[in-house]
Amino acid sequence: EHQNGYLGVTPPISSAESNSREKEVTLTLMDELRKQNTFESDKEAKTREIVLGRLAALVKQFVKKVSLDRGLSETAATAAGGKIFTFGSYRLGVHGPGSDIDTLCVVPKHVSRDDFFEVFEGMIKEMEGVTEVAGVPEAYVPIIKLEIDGIPIDFLVARLALSTVPDNLSLKDDNLLRNIDERCVRSLNGSRVIDEILRLVPQVDVFRDALRCIKLWAQRRAIYSNVNGFLGGVAWALLVARICQLYPKAIAGAIVSRFFIIYYQWSWPQPVLLKQIEEGPLQVRVWNPRLYPGDRAHRMPIITPAYPAMCATHNVTQSTQMIITEEFKRGAEIVDRVIVGTAEWSELFSKHDFFHRYRYYLQIIASTGNADLQIKWAGTVESRLRQLVMKLEYVESLILAHPFIKGFDLCSYCLSEDEVRAVAQGDISEAVAIRKKEDIEGKEGAGPVYSTTFYIGLAIQPKQAGATGPRRLDISYPTTEFTKLVKMWEKYDEASMGIVVRHIRSSALPDIVFDPGERPIVKPAQKRT
Ligand code: 3AT
Ligand code: MN
Ligand code: MN
Image 1: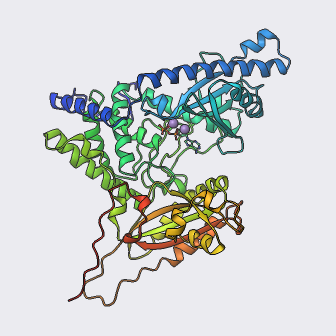
Image 2: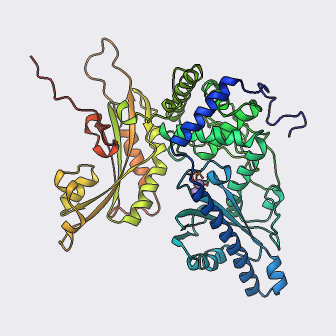
Image 3: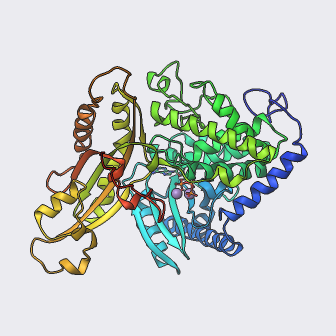
């Protein structure tokens, strides 16, 4: 706690206890969260604990094995230790059924990353109940993805400059970051941030319940996604944590209500901070808008509390900021009505209307002929989408360019080059749509086409009164530039990867983007009289 007796960079707004109405709506909120299936079963919770126990034991075995191989004595090899830490939604206590467990394996200095991907990965494959082990050692944050007893695990590794990693090791000390690899600093960061968040909120259980509500709301409203320019899990957690600091005695329902009002009115780009930004022992950049123009460009800065402080919302653009702000406003209005008793919590969580909202949409279609390659190519295209959004924001008659938070995957079985070309352009004929894998087997020149289609909704300024002719919207420059940009990917190959950007009317949206029964009935065109 702060020397002044509060947590955070300013004193609380109110240290009052919640009133009886706020207590009532907190109970109904928790009922609704249960009804919406955001909690896992007791059985699943138990399975997670068992799995984590087994992984902790395996990490110790792994460190011991490598230590012995390096010539350490039996005693020294056992003392070398090895420990796991969790982070992500599981550590925060806001995970749902089916969430992964984000796990960090911390090892002493004589155990290398190569050992993790060679020795440890092999040991995991031998474990009972393990499926789908995939190591990605070359990733920006090297990772082993796996599943044990149906629980997905994201496993990271950090090698510290210590000769032993004892059970009571804490990751709080910034000096642990000295003399270690950059990738290890990044791997440690997830855990260190979560630890700080939990330290910096006054009532952890209130924080959890409120965050569970905000996460569900953000997912349903399609604004939960870091890559696409909205906010990811860490940013939402930081926003909720700050409200908890400002109302240290309030309960979850009251926190949620304050959350929407405060962030609707927030004076961005004033940053959201849980504590003052600190300097530390490394030669690395700490977020500082006075020093770095890149940091000054952040529109809704939400800063992580562990050294080195970073902005969790680097990807927010003018459009996504407008959309998020509108959603804060909508949230505030609904929660006001919940509190006076004229609305139910379920209204807060109703599905987004992205595919009903705009007259025109851009389709960005990434395609290949290979399932593994498609994941990488579609991921590359997705990670560059915000560049397209930012270029569209400069088009004069566009009010905003609204990216949807996920792409739609399709596999089409094509018999000819012409069909392949059509699918890559987004034109999927009825014949192709219903064709199955076995229909093309053994046929010459036939093959599957994997496509992932992303959507950007276009809000166009209405035509000015008195203007003549239809308003022309020229998006050829942003789309050409974007296509050039994605083709600059180092693994891009003209022959095997397709990228197409085109605009369509809402009536041409495919059924796949709607839930069953959601699609508006199209009225037949009216006859002129
Ligand atoms: P879920 O309940 O798992 O959906 P979560 O908040 O745990 O929610 P993730 O498991 O996707 O979400 O991410 C947990 C943390 O892992 C967040 C971030 O610190 C880190 N992380 C996520 N994706 C990446 C990535 N591609 N590269 C590096 N770190 C990542
Ligand atoms: Mn997770
Ligand atoms: Mn994860």
